[in-house]
Image 1 (cartoon, rainbow, N blue to C red):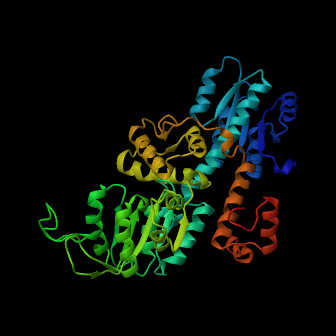
Image 2 (tube, rainbow, N blue to C red; image 1 turned 180 degrees about the horizontal axis):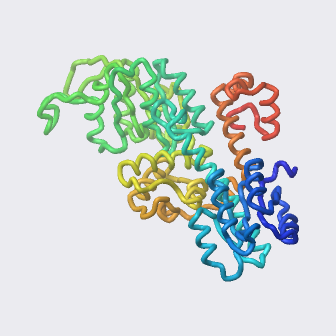
Length: 458
């Protein structure tokens, strides 16, 4: 690694022997050295180091702590995100605690244990990187991360889904959304409706799995008065209520075979008959359906009609799981924190580093619905300003899952932004370069540097 690419560590120490010892102890960092307050402040202004080790006993008060505390205060005023590790003499615990209360990250005692200090410094760099990402996510929430007016994402996989839905929204074809439970199929269906010419008419949804088989036909097609016991008045079904708008059939794979025949007839003829009625009622509605089941396998097993499948699946959109949406778990957690804290617990302001690591590394088998539920519970139950991994009932994730230093954070951000630009530009390099405000050759160089291909799956 080139020296210029290494994260910067500033050592503020007036003992020249200790300066040399510390300078050569850290090969992973670009080590800068200052011996007094003035030179330390100059170095902070020029190099903006992420981490500073600071001896509180600096000239002209080497036997006291006044210069050290003045340096600490000035650095934090200039760069509040700097992680400062203060050095104290043996038994000077009071000064160490005072320094931490003033904003220092941690402290170590002299004589210096290089291994112990190295561990403290390494964790300080990790925390600096995590907090930097945290701030960037704060800035992104509420901006252009909202797609189709309904869903928050920054993942190229979901941007590709959104682009597909926007393309088919204006074409009156049936759309099938395939994805695991909790991936946001109904949100995407609403987004499709809102982007279509039918947006001024109704969006009618029905969960085919939530209604008993003997009642589902009546819910879909309606019934005439006296059609069966309890039918005390004529009632329009969901299909009829969706006239001019969009009908969303969620969990369409749970429709029983006998009812599939009647639904197929509607899709072919675009007319319905209410239960107990003889009048053919024309209905103009668009069908969007969703399922988490493998309909092709159900066709092979004889539990789903092949002709109905092809009527419903004129356009098929596959929705990635949350685990497949790189970076979205933290982005969504931030969104839910703002939403639920405002409603339920305004004292909650953010996440601990361990919570962010846990969110980022958790596989989220329940997808976005699981994340939303965990966030709601955590916000309600949190006793502190920062939500912890324990509040989320998650194991602390491996810290390697998040950027551990500034270089890694910058590379991660570059990769994500380039992928987003390629997704928005539909893999057109010239258009993506224009979105990024750079030249085409520069974008090619960056893609080569980060081993990115001109594809959303790169």
